[in-house]
Image (tube, rainbow, N blue to C red):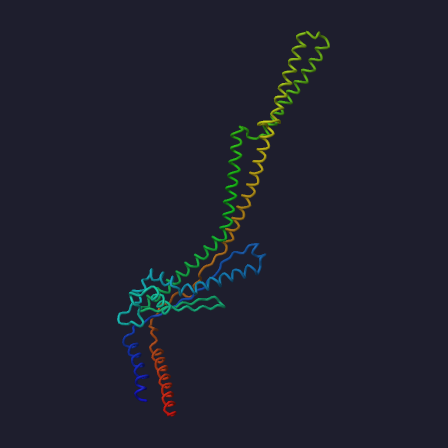
Length: 356
């Protein structure tokens, strides 16, 4: 019994205590607390949405807190902090292989050590996150916790930017499509005016109709003049001939002017139809552009007024006394487990001996 006690209890306890008090270096702890918060400006539409919008924001904040809880303990976080503070050098403790980090440790080894020295407590009901870390100096522990807060804030900003981009991406695509359609409609209308050399066929038609009306008035005056001359002169009279010739010329001019409004070929009716088609296309394109621009502005404003940020309610503390390693606690745990194993071994021994 004495030999078993020395081997199973006394020796492990003495070795543990000797290592903790003689070899292990002091470690200082630093802690901080923060939470993800959402800042949202109330609008008339938001007030009408009522509790549904409130539930959506709360769910988003809770989701971001869950992401941060996992992200702080991830390999990516360990690598980012290592790139900033050189964790392999910071946690190296010559002569203390148990609580120190091997300078040649792999990424996986660095991640396991990171998860051991950095503790994350997350309250799901309140969304509060507390991070604590310990290092061989108080300043180094504080620097580690501060770096964790900064990287967590950067991650929240990245998530917010992704949300904003997703919210405006489809609206921006519709706006680009509407802009392209409007530009094409305007180019087609400009090309029509350059080809036909007519700014507005309606105005040109009104001008041509004025010419026709003038010619018809001249035709009426010429016919009146012919009737007056025919009543007092012979058919061979030059005045009658001139009046008839005048009427024929005016009639030809009227026919030529009216031929421009209809018939085959490049007439005013064809040009007017093409111009009206291009005008309708441009009008629809302008309306679609205004609607797309309004939707894009609304989506961008909605994305801008919903922003999430990291609110630090406890800044990283600077320790004055070393809290780690917990020498008394660890020595007591080794002693307790050793006594438990020694007791179980004694029970097994006496049970086997009694059976004999």
